[in-house]
Image (cartoon, rainbow, N blue to C red; front, side, top):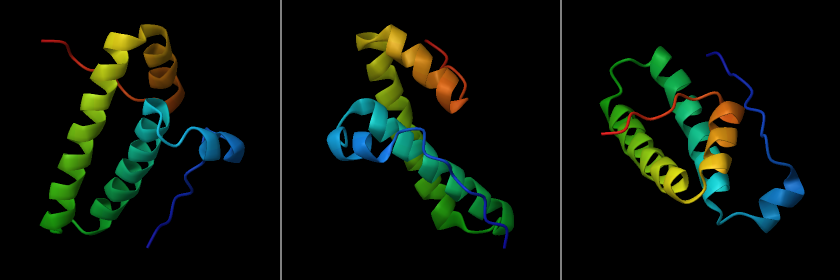
Length: 90
């Protein structure tokens, strides 16, 4: 099994202080998404993990849309920092 290290962008002091912030929640969801994606590369037929991944992706997408509506500058910084694509607007 290949384990990839996930480096946290936020320092330990900021973790203790800002656990409820939207940016921290998006960061933790992104780490969980990356871990599940690497798990699913090895276990392609793990359908329960696929379902969990879809739920986490939806939750992160809702939080990203909330952040883009309220603080567009922080949203752009976070997108670039985490190296994820910008969501399509409808």
